[in-house]
Amino acid sequence: MSDLQTNISSGEFPHDAPGTSDVILETRGLTKHYGGVHALENANFTLRKGEHVAIMGDNGAGKSTFVRQITGVEQFTRGEIIFDGKNVKFENPMEARQAGIETVFQTLALADQLDVPDNLFLGRELVKFKLGPFSILDYKAMRERTMEALVKTGVKIPNIRGTIERMSGGQRQCVAIARTATFHSKLTIMDEPTAALGVQETAQVENIIRTLKEQGEPLILISHNMRQVMDLCDRIVVFRRGRICADIDITAGDVTGEEVVAYITGAKTQPQFEDAA
Image (cartoon, rainbow, N blue to C red; front, side, top):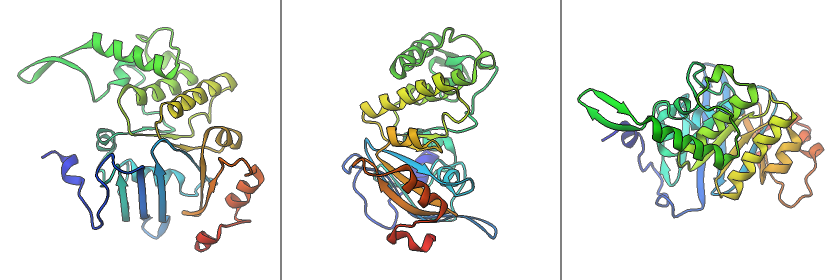
């Protein structure tokens, strides 16, 4: 039995079998303490298949901490994570990837000395055949899969054999996002994907997000960009001081940026989240 299979159990509560529920991700009472610092407290969150949800909040509100618990970067103090009908606790990001969660972190996690195919398949290289402890990599297949991913996401990279260190910030970001399209993912998470990009590069990333939406792929977007969130997402979940303080449906079109800011700053709190005030 693999480490991933060992770490994924049925949990205390019965859940639907994988693929039978429209909920792809749920957290129950998810909490993370760093000693006496309560970075995340009792986060109850639900994401449905095909849904795009934005996570917003001030710096230090708990947004990135929440994502780190889901993706196995850190181990949560208590709570539950139910992903695709299974109670999970990933020991590391590779286990999360194997389960179907692809994440674009702010740091991008790219190897500057490698080219685009090598980055997309880093840790998941395609192999022609193995000779004992030695493997012959299938570079041709990896290049073909890379081109397919770039076409799927609309990313334009003039030379995929060039090293990452020679690319612009926007191209690097697009490579990181294209990596999520190379493999069949059940959930994509993007942490501030356009924070350091120009107008044209931002538009390209937003088009990729729209493409994911058209393909029915669920997404969690962490962003400070109100216009971007309003344009691209179905709901906004607001974090404040490590707790969720609002869950806003923006599909009706009557939610304003001022209202969202009021939740972020603490001027307003939804009744069901009064303990976050």
